Image 1 (cartoon, one colour):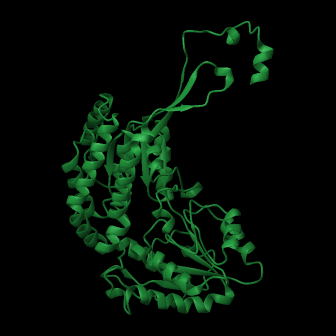
Image 2 (cartoon, one colour):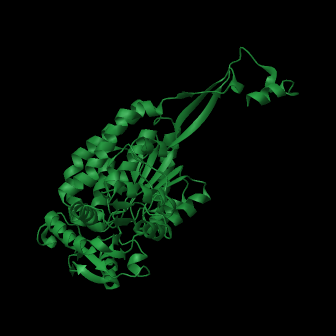
Image 3 (cartoon, helix red, strand yellow):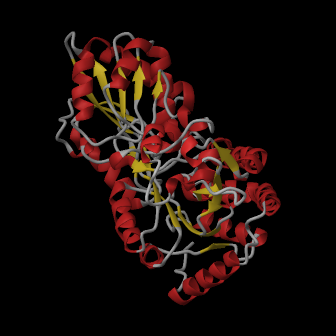
Length: 463
């Protein structure tokens, strides 16, 4: 299946119609926003099986994984916004200092306006629709741009959105990077982009032309640290799960391992046992192991196999775009596999010896770009210590991936791994301008602020 590019003329037509619709104020009432969230929820329920089938066709993603990592997360986000949007959108009165007496101060949450949401191919349902929930909740209109690398999913999403919303409110445009380029050159009130750091820089540069605010959910090389104090069985199971989920094609997948020399051999054996526990004796036959999204992705990731010694895994099948989960030993920090986000099921290991394990780990991580995620396995106390001396978008102690599952904490990157946060109320905030308003009465007009400032000494003491 091939996705056709939406023409520039159609893009301009959609943008003009949405701009006009937003100006009518139709999206502002909370009642309207809740109605649209319910429409989205109903559309997802209607198209759930078709979305799952499309995910299987494009990525070999099982229904269970499709629901747990995509559809179910969006449903949970909608539920949270239906519960909270009335409270979040309400005008809030704030404390006013004595110098403003007798005025009152407020925060008014207003929608930014016309939003552009561009999603990647690895979680094509969740990463398109979760931001859309925030846009609807905030009272924005939205243009959605799914990925052409998962054409069946993208086509199904377009049909689903058309069934639920008029295009002057929410519309889908399709195509390759030329379409992205046309969209980024257009004027939006907010851009929400999920993708690579390289593309994120281009998005930010284009947005700067119109002073458009952006949320950039990017990626990077997320470290996974295995200390000698780690429970190796639990560590190996949770690391194997995090790395084989979506075949490592996850922005917060553990990317490489920093492991204490004393436990490396035992960890390799335990990792092999846990992959078998999760996927059976032959992972190629597992219905829960995803394939590389394209031939180009297969070639890129399988090319990293030469960057170290294979101590587990290593099988590939180009005809299925299958790459077995693989541990690489004796990897140079300067090797290509250690200088590019892998986005696949390969795991380079960097061995660290000596009593100053934490110090070496901190040095290794801080000398590199800030990652989207950070994973520590070992003593909780030591984990907090390493966290306090490093930086990442988020992370876990003695787990992987699971910080994304809590809508009560922010999800987002820092530095090279992105900017801005979302999930739960933060998704509402991402598409909202917090407007400060001071309401002054007219029944009194104190002279203290006016020239020639006769009571300046008094006001100075109050400030």
